[in-house]
Image (spheres, one colour):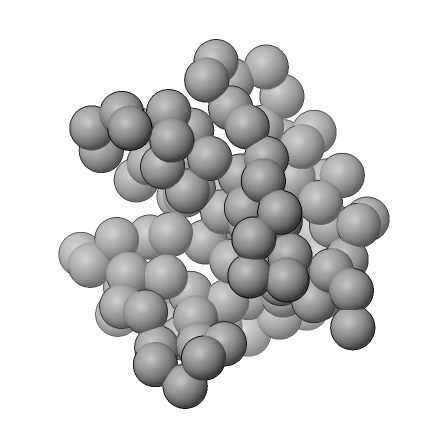
Amino acid sequence: MPCNEELALRIREVLGGLPDLIDKKMFGGIGFLIKGNMACGVHKNALIVRVGPDGYENALAGPYTRPFDITGRPMKGWVMIDPEGYESDADLRRWVQQGIDFALKLTAK
């Protein structure tokens, strides 16, 4: 199943004119990187958000979330959100902003 291009367009709108933003095909989907660090992405119909180790448990406690695991080895600090969890523009913005906030804390690559 290809990645959800409509979701990718919605994410691009939220990310707007952020400096040092690139999108890159990866893991069978699209990753959005800020200063070389992935903030969020799309895998099939799931939104991927890098929330970091401190935000991980809290993010997983929310509805429609699950660990980011496409290889059989979950990545701590990353979550996948099912379509119901990003259906509204406000929910999508909230999730993407978490990814932006975490990526901006990291050293540029």
